[in-house]
Length: 553
Image (cartoon, rainbow, N blue to C red; front, side, top):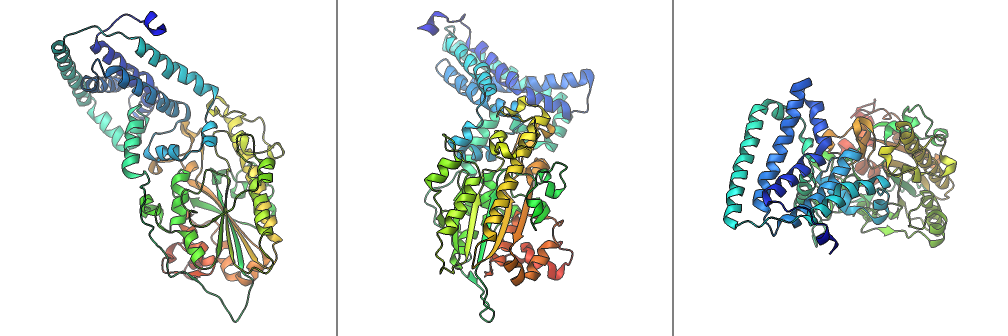
């Protein structure tokens, strides 16, 4: 009744389609045109004409599309859906510099409620009201002029011809400019809303969506431990920490000017300075690093139903345990023991919404180790999955005791913070991670009856405003180094070093060598004295020193 009372002046379907095309093509895509302007060599009037032509092409293309899709009985539902989708896609592009791709849709589909809440902000609320809610209300208030169906068809035909003519004419006049820009910047389509969201959803469901009931593919079935019976040693206990959203350039261990590693710098750790990730998002990198497939050959469909690193270690006799403080293991730990964090620890480290500080992993590790019977000699592989520096709420990823850098960006609407505030919040999350990792090392230092080792490797990095980009998930081919350059750190107990001196020395030699997450699968299995034909010696870091003394593969 309220909408009926305030109905605006009636309009023809042709006018409605044109206005909708202008809203979607021009209003929602300002960042796209800004990027186009930055890529054109023209200046002044030529630059303005090129941007006007870009707007004209999109408006005309959408107008042509709507002549096919929008009829009196379909126009409003389609318009509402496109405005809704386009509004949120435009927010991601314009406010966070995020390119909408199938990988980003995969991230969205695998995000839990806690992570989703971290993206909510007053900036998003205001944007939603202005760019989504109000336009939808306006659409609902529209009243179409009654027109005979034949006249509608004639007008649609004329509008279609004119739209195609405009698109072809503008593309012909500016062909060289459009061809040069789009051939060299294929990522641009990820900035055009709402087609970016729609096309990426379709691509995700065609290529990336998990399939049900696929048979498990066994892998590394010949895996076995090589035990030197002539020289008995203590069993090995390795703690692998999977980091979250940590970038190598923010670690003072790697030369960062701010002291973000005050505790680890006092440990005898090996920090590898030139390590790249398999992907730019958790949903890609975590399954990839455990799969045994190098990045260039990675098949995520196959990885989703094939055994991986943890299965092979378990087959070879290791007790494999996954302890999670993130949104799950993305299928990598489905067939191994998952340690349930005790309720008292959740009460100690988690907030009312169930989001926990990473020190819950340290206490959970202590609890798990305490549960191992003294007479148990089973070798152990324990994986801790951090919350790390997950954005955009970086201020929540550290405690007050580990926030040396001020002022901070104390909101998840990071685009409204200054550059210094944002970096301080992110760097404080690294300081807290430094503390957590040091506590893990301190914990396993005192474990009796085991040779203990520690390996930390972040899943991907993070953009904090460099080149206008925030967060992560950019297409790998054009991703900034901040999203792909990740920290990797190892530590070994005196007992481990004593019995594996040559291997530790070999790893020390590779601190500045180019390495990647491809190295995790073969190197960790070799460290754990597991033999299998699926180990690729080219990526096994322990095999590099025999032929390459400088540690370069």
